[in-house]
Amino acid sequence: MGIVIAVDGPAGSGKGTITKLVAEQLNLVNIDTGAMYRCVALECINKNIKETEINKIEEVLKNIEIQLKKENDKQVVLLNGENVTDKIRTREIDIAASKFSAIKQVRNSITPMQRAMAENKNIIMEGRDIGTVVFPSADVKIFLDCSSEEKARRRHKQNLERGIESNFEEIFAEIERRNKLDSEREIAPLVKAEDAILVDSTNMTIEEVTQKIIKIIKEKVNI
Image (cartoon, rainbow, N blue to C red; front, side, top):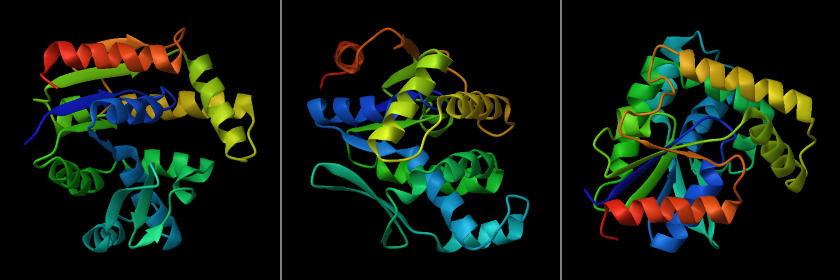
């Protein structure tokens, strides 16, 4: 096992953007665990499987193949060999991923995949339970957060840049709902690990957050 940097935080906190930049500057392997749960949600939707149909979900989990690759300096997500990088970033998948990721069987299947991805590599892994469940002994734990208004503003801007129709009020309500579900779920809830360092990025630029996290990492590990 190499160095493990765990970055947890709620939806819209900027984990994906920040971990990508930190990974580039520190030469770490960036692992987006949220993409993995989104893949499960997409596969179940494609097969018309509801979150209550546990037996059918277990069959999906037995056969699913998820790969995170880097192509042309961008992360590409492959689901059973198909590039689903854009397909898993829709509002429908946002909602479905929150439901499917709360299922014990899904988390029990995905967590070992996440741990396997870290073998013999220096990684930065972002998600909601990395520092509490996936890697409770991570070398560095960061909990990234910001105000709900800022989360919605960032997601709204991101959607517009991707050409996705977007409504600020709807995004704000969805982020609030998603974070409430994630924080209150019985299995691996979204909570700050006791030994995690809180970084509130509400009034910070992307570069300021990136450099602050890099400083925290360098103070804790030799990298």
